[in-house]
Image 1: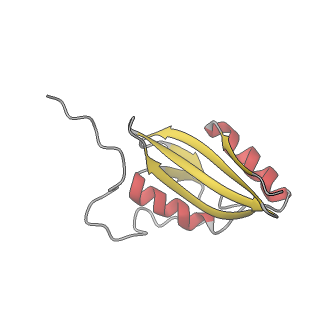
Image 2 (image 1 turned 30 degrees about the vertical axis):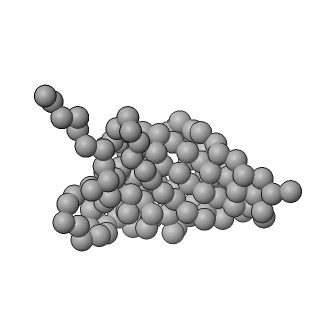
Length: 119
């Protein structure tokens, strides 16, 4: 039977769980972000082992910094640079850092939560 789990995490739990997954030969399938209605950003890492899919989920304030997982999954550096450029979330100790130039954008951080407008 194939299982699909969504695992909510705190920021401090990301690297220990990623290390565990890497040690168990999970493959990184994708990493993505989305802006939430409350002005925070949800980041998801999807990992697969056999037919089992685990999605690690963390919700952080706009402009927050997360640990890079690129030491364990080198391809994650591309996802992390994309999320940085589009959502304004930074990643510490990325193996490859395009320093905000991964994409050529007309608007900086187009998907980052917008500050609330004052009336």
